[in-house]
Length: 212
Image (cartoon, rainbow, N blue to C red):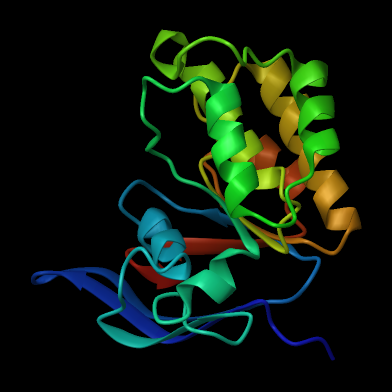
């Protein structure tokens, strides 16, 4: 049996006295696409940020590829692509400059794949991020997450802000490409059609607990 790409064991997270996640245990195997669904405030974003090592659990253990995403960040995160629900890139940069930065950081960066996706979806590369629409900025963020062909792709509301045509074709085509290479995908969504088309497994979060 394959080793899990993602492991959470009895993970809880609180912000002060407010619990966000409660005793979550979860394993994701290679080649699985896990869609997380739940109401606003259910804990989806907190769960994904714990996986990325952007937050530290209040209790429990988080492992990616058998390692701690905080104490072994460099080894672990070179194998992960991540798209946050909030954009975090300097607005004065152009997408082409951002892609050059990512290429220098990731040994597995695939320039041919990036060029094909930029051409296929007409992503504007020579304008500053600040001049792009919210949807175009999210396209750029998505490309940064996938162009190094990660072994694990973590996406927080990837379809938010994207027009329906782009969302359908872009997400389905790129995720299908990665799944064919045994990439694991964990994503949150409020879009049931998106879940139905992209996820091979679904997790339901409610009030900080993974109930199904």
